[in-house]
Image 1: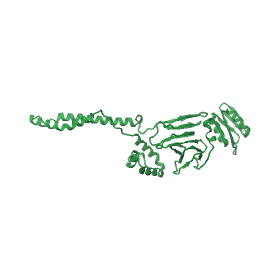
Image 2: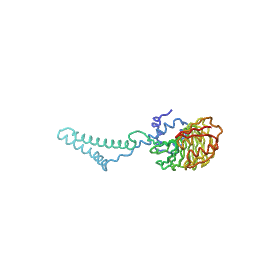
Image 3: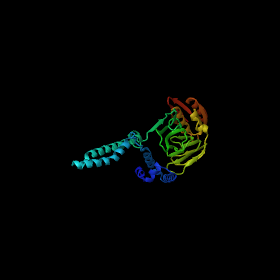
Image 4: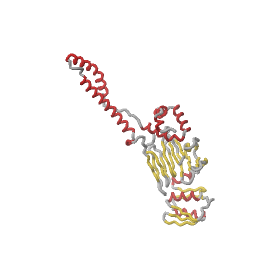
Length: 344
């Protein structure tokens, strides 16, 4: 297993990060596909190399030329001092020359130290090597949030969800992490792919719009509205490519997945304030209502296994929604503050 130190001392890896070309891109892409378990260390090493840059220190105008001229003239002066010293029998006259060289050494050291401090100060964020600052945005049940990232990408975060993203994106890629549900409109950037990590899946795009639902106890659903996305499981090298109108449903437990079409009105309705169900199970309905209204359901009796419900609601109270459902699905309910008692 390679560590980040191994990558940092590999000349071919350093050359690829600093001066990429098609041949090196091909080699390291194949290497990552063959060694998925070591990609994390590779990315960390690449991040360190990209962040530790060495800008040229700008010394005062003419200072270098002056030092150089002084050094070029010094042999002539030194020769004259030697001749004078022999004539006067006073020795080699080394002291003035030594004093000059000591001064020159101090100046050169100062320039070098200035360059070093400048490079460290500009390349390391707040004195931390390869540190990336992450921002976390969360929504509570019943709350939604819209935000714009530094690259211009816009994200709508659904209720009871969490999004983690870097304060400043990496020069070579853009990566965010999602728990819950969010809709993405990704700003196009052909040089920096956009990655969304969700419970073992990585969705990769350049510029497109899509919805990801990653709720505990349910399949991960990735629904593509426009453009194209590539979805890869971290333990597999075989990606799934989605076309607009298609959705990938992935079971994080078993790894089983399927691709099918989706109804944008149902999947994306939450962005416009709609609650829409299409043959939804009782668990799906209750979790949606818990997140939407910020309540907790306590169920008495057995939950119907074959229970399917279809319907849509906009700007209605929880009481109105439950009254409508109870009439169709034959259950009783009682609302006590933030707790809803349901009996089948």
